Image (cartoon, rainbow, N blue to C red; front, top):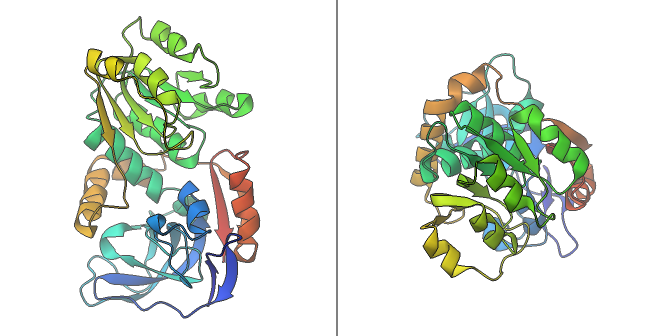
Length: 321
């Protein structure tokens, strides 16, 4: 089968063996693939995101079940599924049954591919790790990404009061209100913490989903309320920076780091169970939407990756096998 694999120059298309499902896995004929930031590292061989020599990269896809392992529960051949699972850049991919979800009736494969990682990552960050309570002021940084846009919508759906989104692009920033943001700020503007404090009556944010890190972290703490929480899920602005330990202690902030890379399959399955308990009726009703910025054939995966690397997209970039 054709698949996108890692190389020193980024993703390349090669012929590789079709995967065989383990007893707890399903085999899926892939219909649509969604790109994520981690794919850019995997494409150049970053093993921390699951890259392996000669193996398909990627992490999010939709398709049709063509084989079911003996211990895989809840699925049968012919089911339409969306999956948050490694190896998506391919004509066929496998997923643990606990990392797959049925595609609701009336939803197409392209739409379905935009949802799994955003739903699971942001529900876990906002609700499970962030302990979101109704009425709280919430910020999602990097909000114009597919994951960020879902985060804004989950925050509103779960009862947040003021919802803040960030984007450094004026055009994309203006669109955040379509997806639930009450206030949109530019983190390149040094006054943005003051804008947030003003919008919260001087109290600050109760909860931030931090996809930026780097030098913005101390600014984020400045905009955080007493006993606020910051959940770190990304490092788009940098892996390392100065950290204002005094502000962290003074505000008694919980700074929480999360990643799927070090979680067991049992932990990941539980994340999906919790997300579906809160959100699945709304997902099935089509209440969470992510715009598709651009679509490429799988053969042009490198062009899709370069489009993402250029950071000019709004929503999701798709590949179609």
